[in-house]
Image (cartoon, rainbow, N blue to C red; front, side, top):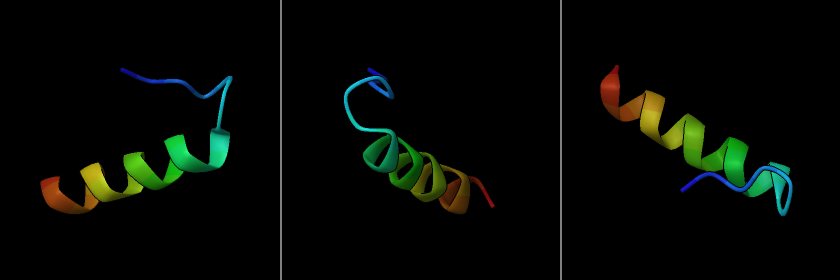
Length: 23
């Protein structure tokens, strides 16, 4: 589900999108 080891930027962007939806 989360692959920060592969792409930290992509993971961060996905996290931001998820948090934005929760907000």
